[in-house]
Amino acid sequence: MRQQKNAYQFAWHSYCDWYIELSKTILFSEDKKAKTEVKEVSAYVFKQILVMLHPFIPFVTEEIWLKNKFDESNKNFLMYKNWPTGKIKKDQSLKEVEKIIKIISELRSFKNELNVSPGSFVDVAINKIAKKNKSLVNNNDVILKKLGRINNFFDKEQDKPSATLVISGDIFKIYFDENVDLNLIKENLQKRQNKYQDELDKISQRLSNKGFTDRAPKNIVEQEKTNYSSLKDNIKKISLTIESL
Image (cartoon, rainbow, N blue to C red; front, side):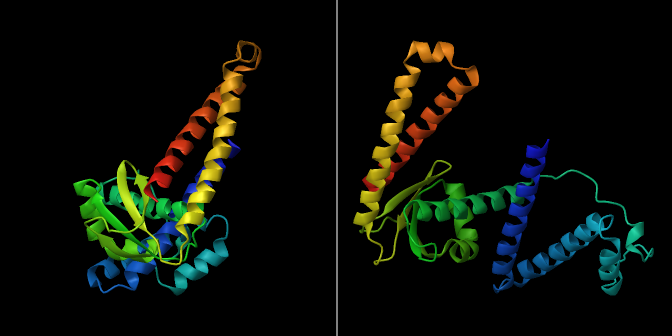
């Protein structure tokens, strides 16, 4: 139960962080319609947060509610408001936002894996991604460029070294700043790949040992199989990146 609660808390904080990041980008843009929408949604979200927090810190929330004149039902006091109800409806807009978050998150993680500074800018070729996702990128390039630290999106691959990043089946070609040492990155990746391969071989030996699979607890054997699959995927991913550098 505690793990489930912690998972909910993590998801809540994660969505809040992303909402703030996305909102700041839009508010500093020139899109007046989008800016108005963000302001309205932010006000709504803030009011619902006050409603949910009221049973825990009633004097603070009531003070904020009254001073900002948030009442819309002529009841005046926040204590009369009901908690929000209903279910989240995942429409196309929400799915697109989730895709945008995934692209930015994967790009940030990719930089971290390669030991590339998170503040460095990249160029990205999107000629090998699905048509609908290419439209998504083009329609949201301001947000992606700002939060993903991307200089340019190209419809054609560039004649210079790149790294391949696969996101949900789409292939993105990443071009780093000139001061990024791709040879050093390649060496580090090969070392990591060798390390993963050694671990994979050890797990393979254990799983091929009938004495181990018969005597070890079932959950331990299953965990080893999961680790084996994960390492195999990581090695494949690293191989793809090395080949593209």
